[in-house]
Image (cartoon, rainbow, N blue to C red; front, side):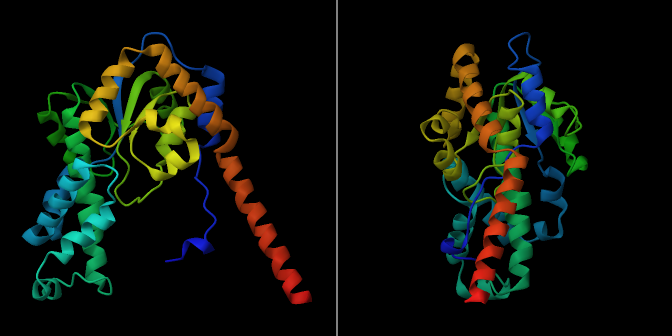
Length: 283
């Protein structure tokens, strides 16, 4: 909606509760609760029972976007979606109102990307891991039963965001994340929360994480499922290296990317804008 020259960008950061937990507890080195875990939501029930699932054209778009995202996680779901729509005959696009100035397009977008692609991609990632603990699923509780058919996924229920989740991040060797497909370049809050609490995360490739943290970010990023599993295998057997990476990100996040820092950034920016406005009016 805005050109980049009109935007001052700042990554959101970690809540103070996670920062304090990490400072108090340190980096866990004892008997871990899990080797690998995932924290978040999938929408297995909504994929099948949402009214838009009745349209094969909508389901096919979601599956094709997901397949291309899985092939290379550096692709943006938005760009992939627009490319798929362009492959549809003009008359069909008009019938299904798949144009940006149609309100139905935006309903379809939410279903395709948030519900469909998020679910397909995350389930492909999770089903590829040898064994993974799953926390969450609260956004689509009726879909949880379908998780039990995946023998490698151990569903662990939902937990309290501020009380329990910092401990889970801290006592899991590797948390795996797949960024919400509505996001283009940026990082999910879980990335900051996990490391500030003293945990370790592998995350799909994000331009903003690379830009913010440099070469270190590439050590925890993956562009393919094969790369993800190779890094899981490596870091599970290299505890010291994994913990050193955690210390680096924990220090960087606690210094530069906390909620307090974010709020300070906003208030400083607003103050600067007010002062500029005042100067313009005086002139």
